[in-house]
Length: 281
Image 1 (cartoon, helix red, strand yellow):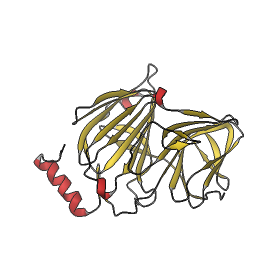
Image 2 (cartoon, rainbow, N blue to C red; image 1 turned 30 degrees about the vertical axis):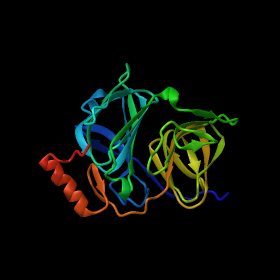
Image 3 (cartoon, helix red, strand yellow; image 1 turned 120 degrees about the vertical axis):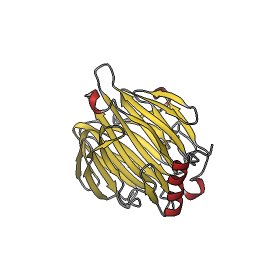
Image 4 (cartoon, one colour; image 1 turned 135 degrees about the vertical axis):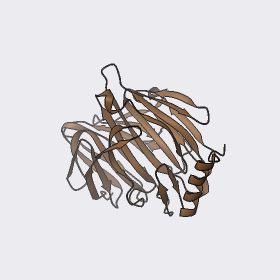
């Protein structure tokens, strides 16, 4: 099968979000067609509580799904639907904002003060922009791990790998979200359907992707046409997220936490926020 070419490699950029959370943004608020159906990926990671404790207080979303994956520390969630929960190491929270939801996410470090997690935004198609909001919380023990003969490990957050299905279901963009660890010096090929957009985000170790493009910690790798994603792990091995989805190929009107298809829909959403009519369910 044809190896996917690397069309972009970039380092995640320091960004402040929420009430002053220091994070690194791999992509977001650029051309929404580039990673369609995905809009944004943030890496929030720090050993200093002052950089994350203020958290992400109450704020709205409409028209998207947010996926939060925690590697260290905890994130407490609350929303206008009455959902409450705390996700910790290895846990996942998948929130479908749909027609509108107001929520907050408050991070807290582990006993050593460490906090690490990712948040990915997935767009909703026009037909589901105003769908009923939904909240899914998945514990680490419910996320399957495939251990390969070559020593690599693949955690399946969502989608299917090697005939094993992840626990998150009924997601509009039908994504595959994998956490992949490849042993030092090993080569790994991962098959991805040709019609999907796919990216990798390296967060431990280093490796060479596609035609030997090097990528290390906090590196985003965007892939072009082809099928198989090829990686050669460096001396310390490599761990990365590999995320793919079928592009929606729809117009995007985006402002902050609201993503719609037209400027009129976007304007209406913010008018409803001002009037107190934003929440529909």
